[in-house]
Length: 194
Image 1 (cartoon, rainbow, N blue to C red):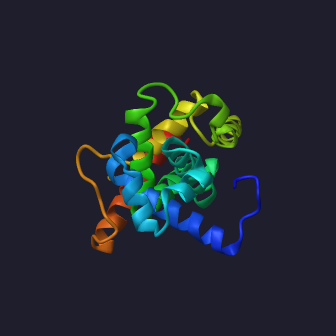
Image 2: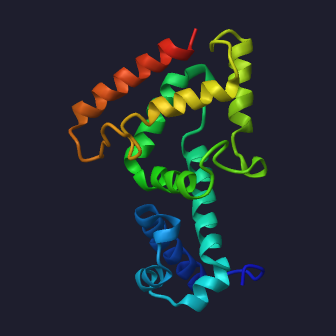
Image 3: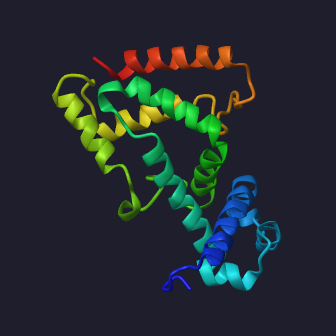
């Protein structure tokens, strides 16, 4: 089916599978996710799911790599304003905590060390170039661009669902989020901007 264009009905079914699977994998991880629950929530059947994605692993890959592309497109980097980028990442984690949970499951169940994805699947080359150019222009502190990026991302995740201290939600008062955004912005500015 992947080789044939989808009908509107097929696209709707595929979308329902992706939505249901995103919730299932975010909550239960790769090993704990159940195809039966996914197809029930998506109002489809196993044959349809396997026709679109091939396997449970293939389904997770589609969701996981889609989430990486989403965060890259929805929160594009501005290396001349890494503090602003960190705040935008914080806001996206509030909107879509499932994206962080998916990455966490991938880390726990697939790649416990090193890069989160294989080198061929990495989507950070443009970010690294942008940081290197900002470093050359004197706007960002010297250092390995990957390490600078990793530090900023880690700071932006301080209150995310993977925090071992406190996981924020979008339901908290807006003034609490504003205080965190201000602290994050100033901390990243001081840590990596010149």
